[in-house]
Length: 295
Image 1 (cartoon, rainbow, N blue to C red):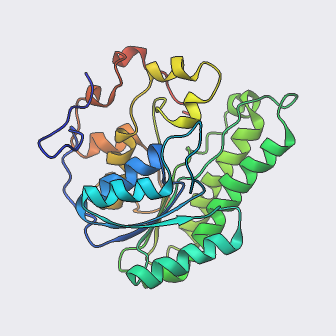
Image 2: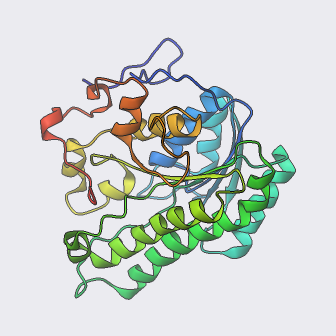
């Protein structure tokens, strides 16, 4: 079973939201395709304002879409979009994105740290340029975007930082599997852990979200045997729905804290009432889906 389209042309979904992001301003890194664009599109369907900071200003031979085509998709979905060509590794680009969001929409309510680089090579094989790239985008980029948005988030009535990073699982298996990538993703997760504690008196929620299964993205498709791998993946819509549930304040863990959580997509959507995850599949049976790493 795959996602069908409803009468409006939007993907049908088993998720029935109880909250809305209408009027909220979201600053997202790397939102021109894949999971980031799916999250932004779901928010735009509510009527949210989306500020997209992404590197792809011109068409890329191996990557679909640009920050400008993504903005057109968001506006067609019902939101307002501000496309910005920039790199989370550059301080001036991130500062400019925060400033542009304030100028255009008057504030920032949500930061989504989506931009990430992946290389699953072992220590002998990993190129140090790839190591540096993962550290700069995943760790430093997440820290920088969160840091520079803090004054605006403090001024919001519902400030939230959501980072796409895994639970901090210190089982040696994951460090031994692909150490360079593990350090980069856990650096993002440490940012969630630390900021949640640091900002607990500022009214800003800080959480992470991670998929239970492989998700079909350009990064996966461009890996060796990527086209084969995504046949056992879910579509990005499951992460979009889960992010929406987190950001609208769904009661995900009754009695639990609103900040400092490491959620999985299935956990979030189950708490929101989803009982059947098959509509998110790209065709593979549930028992043939590939589990994502770190879980």
